[in-house]
Image: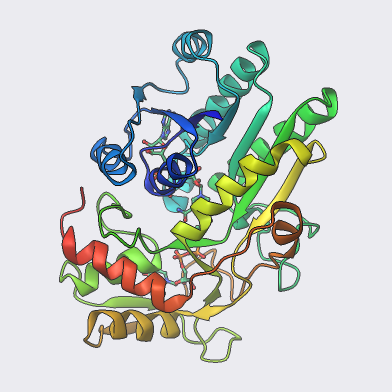
Length: 335
Ligand code: NAD
Ligand code: UD1
């Protein structure tokens, strides 16, 4: 298939482009490089042995996006482009609604205008807020605790309304749990700008000496060891989930939400131990107060994705840590 990947130069997008090329798809990337480097795509081309054209373009540039759709005959779109820092979204909510919601609106309008009605969207487990129960199933109530999460909810709702208005649309809303790790080649990985917010990239900065120790946000959560529990998923498994979603889009019933997770909960201290084992030395940490907005526990019930896409995660915590460490060690300054 000929696929447009928005945000394809970023962390999850670059891994997905590689899997798409390996599966034989033709891929064009649209990215404004606001949070990525074109070097990631050059490396994807090397690994795949195939070209990967990049259009440096902002989704908010409606005439530019329209021209791209007019020039190229896309059959489907995978939409990663967006801002994703929760704290930043609290400080700058309008920027998040403008970039994420208005950017998606431009994309959907162009897709409709050019008759490209096949979409895979990067949603997030954040749409469950503090989930009513675990494992989390797709039918749980949705809520947002910050503007980033609300931007995902708004986009999901736009997609549901669109598919209701026109039954010829096929949309997969993929709700990712916690993507971590890197490509096993050590050539692709997560390259956050500044001090990382999330657990694995922060721990990798500790492992490479860029941070002195991990701050563990709370050891008094109602969990087995008192630290937060999450469903970490290897980014290559996640990327393969997108290839499966593209393959099964046609068979979906309008707009469908699917959890992409492993179904296993891992605590912060379990992650510290696993990454310490991968890099061969104990990584220092200190307990700090809970981070505002955090929840104790969340993990996915991924059985709907297994049933509808024939996809399930295959890589375990050891692979996530070994691959994450290989990337960090070989690319201490990122791309
Ligand atoms: P990322 O920042 O690495 O990738 C996003 C890409 O989108 C970047 O390359 C950025 O330059 C581009 N972009 C942003 N705004 C744009 C715009 N207006 N026009 C064109 N390009 C634009 O992030 P990621 O971790 O790869 O996440 C990809 C998607 O998955 C995002 O939508 C994110 O919200 C979602 N998601 C990520 C996680 C996670 O933990 N990484 C979890 C759940 C959902
Ligand atoms: C975060 C986002 C969430 C997003 C998800 C995607 C926040 C508040 N939430 O979720 O919206 O969908 O990423 O992956 O940013 N931790 C530490 N020390 C750290 C960093 C994290 O102890 O320096 C702990 C957290 O308290 C949590 C766990 O590690 O228990 C995972 O945190 P993180 O990687 O930030 O992911 P989430 O909070 O699940």
